[in-house]
Length: 198
Image 1 (cartoon, rainbow, N blue to C red):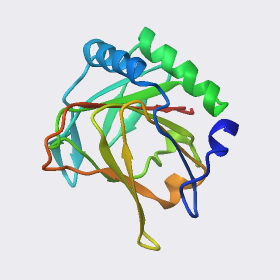
Image 2 (cartoon, rainbow, N blue to C red):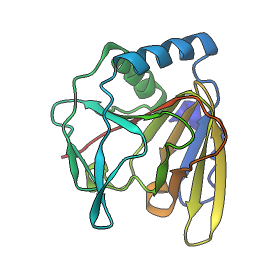
Image 3 (cartoon, rainbow, N blue to C red):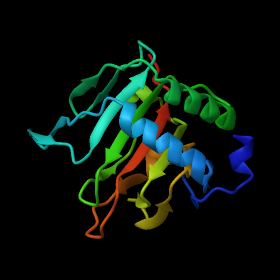
Image 4 (cartoon, one colour):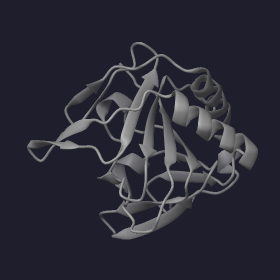
């Protein structure tokens, strides 16, 4: 990831984290948000957590190559075919990261009540040290990283058009979350490009 490494690793230890504010300028980010909001097949899912099925506090969609099945919290996600917008974004992410991605998880946070719980993207399908390219479109939201062993915390405000790259041993040592907020929030779309391995 030569382009992003030149910007400096934000994580002090145990991983790599690169932030590129406004990777897509305003007009281009606006266009992507509208097309993704309208064209992706958003679904309200239920996940098996702590012994019971609970509604996910956001809308989700999974796209990728036919073999890129992803299992998360007891639910198998067969991929939908790439849309033109996602295919173009994937090519951009592959160029920046210098590696291929065969899938993308899309999340739609409708307002401040929608959230993502504290977790690590450490499923076996992603391999031991995955590179994940995360794009944000729409409302600014806080992404929080926690290092359980040291109690270190890092907060990043992700804005419209921002790119965030997670790499190295980050998923082994750090957890991240997108917390709820009482502040009025407009919709936000997050895309995380991944490579599912057999």
